[in-house]
Length: 372
Image (cartoon, rainbow, N blue to C red; front, side):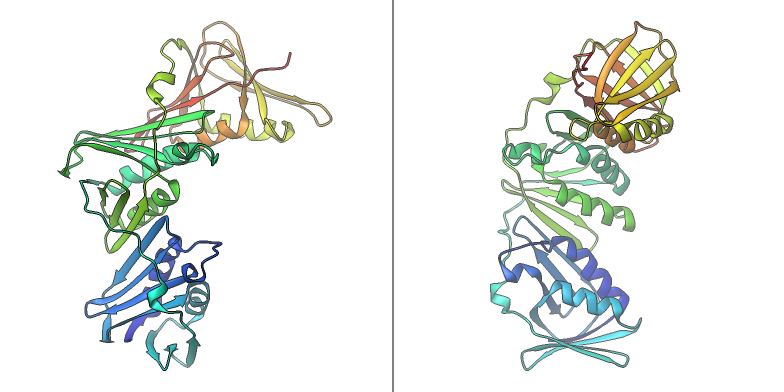
């Protein structure tokens, strides 16, 4: 194998493929990149057996070939190289690089040990604008569960038709249902749904936004594939069933509270400094055109804060997890947010007022029981 590529292009390929390298693994080969030199250019791939990433660039290839090289070491070396042409070759069982006055040798692993995810024929495909995909990811991934005993909640449920796409995530304490309307061309297959882990969705959203490419999405019975320009990510699907999320959305929340998003976020951050380290509970005292936030924690202290708000219903006292509220508010992008409420023991719904994004979300949060 022998090829040449500019340092910045090589570093970009390694960075993108690096999202597929596991941070910890018992299989040494997974700590490597698979580098392939082809007549059309260079392809770099990585996998942790749940997701696999491959990305490529056109460059001068003198001799085609494959090699598996330690990802961490290669990234560290390439990052420090001069901004110049990098000459790469495999010779006498060594991976060699020359750039300007620098020369390096790495010892590769057997290419045959490098795994690949099984490829299945896609039964469904669609395309989404980059900004739409990014918005849907930002609005939902924070609500994914980390409870390994409930694997279906460890991913985002994606439902897509030719007129609407939905992303839904929940951990049992909060839920976000985001959707975007428009024309999403369904190229083959019937409208489908799948549960996909956030570690697959987050990097795809970043690549799409940076390049402003469309996201091409393909589904098979066991995997989802996302294509952004010259980069492809394949992820195993999580097995369901996903909870019937529509049934938990309150239908009788009539009390409306409107408050500035940034002001509320800042207030929660201040007050939550003295909240319980386990429950993170803060008290919402909702009054006519006012919102009072307070915390009183044994052996720690107490805090109060006061905000202007639009509210004209009966007084309410509600407890919420401050961390969950901050996640919701940070995901939304409007100047104001709307809380639709019912009682201290029923779920509240938070939505953006005049969202600027290509997608909108309904965020549900369960209350915490207050200690009188």
